[in-house]
Figure 1 (cartoon, rainbow, N blue to C red):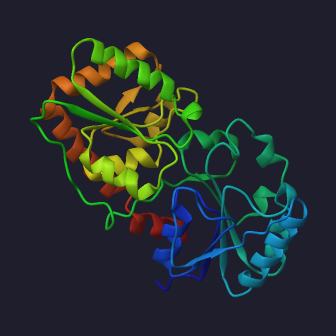
Figure 2: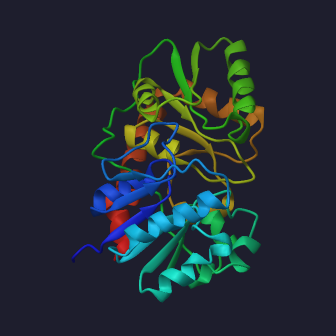
Length: 308
């Protein structure tokens, strides 16, 4: 099958860059990512103007590029208010894919239903819970570059356990609750080195992940889905704790993430202790995690689903 000519627009955790690299297209971002996500196929349109001027300049810039493409894949949002530009792309014969990524639509169904979103040729969401806010959307799991992330696995024998938590925004990832849970476990006599990384380059997070024994992703019962940190940790072969709702669980299948349901300090503490006390369990979950990502999140499989 000949790959269509695809222009990615947006910058969400390096995913548009990864898709551009795999499909041979370009990716347009509107500023350099603070965590260092980039691509040789990246075009930065960083206009130093306030809205609405910067918005119009972005639209004009993307329009000049888009005439050479079959598909524009928008990540997070489009370029004009109410997604009006979707009508323009359709009028000039360019297909559009609209990909919701999280808080831009979660709990805001009106932003989908009262816009021109349904004009898009395809609508995707990155986590199953977003389906309830976007009629007509399809859930496609986030991709992982398994060529970049090698399997390390979990070490059985270790006196001090390294726990890694890497929130993009502490207040939105339950970091305070996680810290209290770790402190409670330490107070019981467990030797833990807790690493909390915020606002650092993505490559540094991956390096620390390889050295960690346990990864704690976001603790958000109101969302109940795992993020890219969980996927990368599983690909590395590390056991992961993360909030997973029963709603999302129905879509994830047999996922080896240790689920947090209520997000209380006591629940997190209990799960941490269980993993520390059972190094064989950590090793097993690590191996199962790699298998899960290979089966469900390999970037080449995701590209085939998106652009078939």
